[in-house]
Image (cartoon, rainbow, N blue to C red; front, top):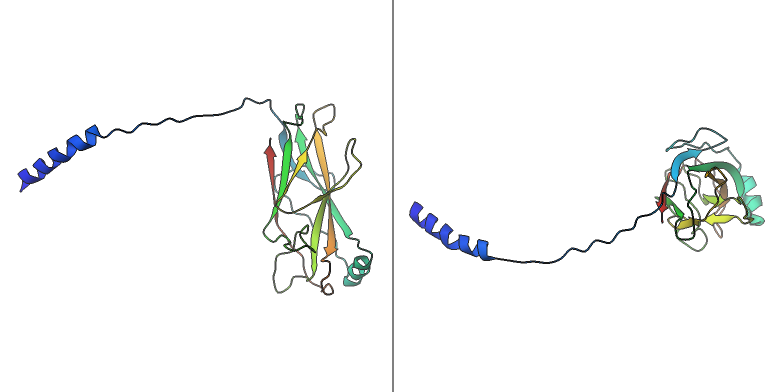
Length: 195
């Protein structure tokens, strides 16, 4: 029996040795100048860190009902993204910043809101909006939409530093029922892409 096994192995072996395939692998790359160093996130002028917890102030249901009639949000806090060594930002070499949410708004009335984690104690019909505040030579506010990137062109100072200030606001979901009291927690993941 062992001679049969060897014989079969010898018959198969030439087929393995003679089998040939070839192909090519093409690589494409770019050599770029360094874009920026990300230093972290801070609030209230604090020291930047990679992970941040922001405690927003308590507010009333009545306040949000009143603001909703005026199509306004309730500013609740600010945070800042810090970058250094940003001397090479151009229209083709820039930052793109994304804020991802596990619970983004998904309809016309709340697509720009970061909705709270849904628990039995969660406030209803309210979310958080985030806006990039005007900086350097810009005079406009950029509404941040969950899971979509915002391009940051050159906003660095003479030292190559960029500080991007964001405002967080409580905002009632448009066309929804009244805001109900409860907690509001949301975890947002930021991603910085260098283009």
